[in-house]
Amino acid sequence: MADGATWTTGLFPDPRRSRQPALDKVPDWLMKDVPKLMPKRYGQACPVAKSLELVGDRWTLLIVRDLLRGTCRFQDLQRSLKGIAPNILSDRLKLMEEHGLVSRHFYSDHPPRAEYALTDKGQELGIVVGALAVWGSHHVHHQTALIHEDCGHPVQVAYYCSHCDVRVHGAAAKPQHT
Image (cartoon, rainbow, N blue to C red; front, side):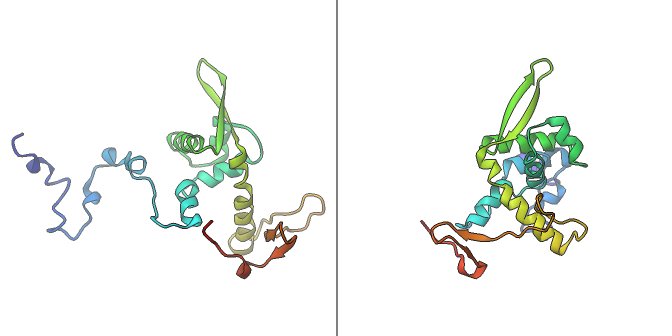
């Protein structure tokens, strides 16, 4: 084709002439890889934003929740995460492995089958999942509470200063560049 702009006119309209975003006309088959090509970036020098860039995708913290119970095989995760597509689960596990949150161990070569476990870094997300569980039981899912297994009473999530050996209230905890 001599004029490259001619064949793209319908797919990518000139944004100066259209009020609609150009991506709304891109076919689904072309858009399927966009999340991989354009990872979520907030562009903020903030530990919350940076953490969400890694674990803020849909399903990621639910995968962590399930792996907090122990090692799981792919099919076990797929069974417990109702509605997750196999390719999405696979992508999330690969990303989590790349960032050192999970480790993968093959238990079968033919066909290749793997089981997954949280690394120490991934285990540290347990407090995040627990905090979400406590918040969720208070505000959106009253039927369930995170309880202390020994006594059966609900637990609380709190800040703690190991240097001072005291509980710190939220207003007294603040981020600081190190």
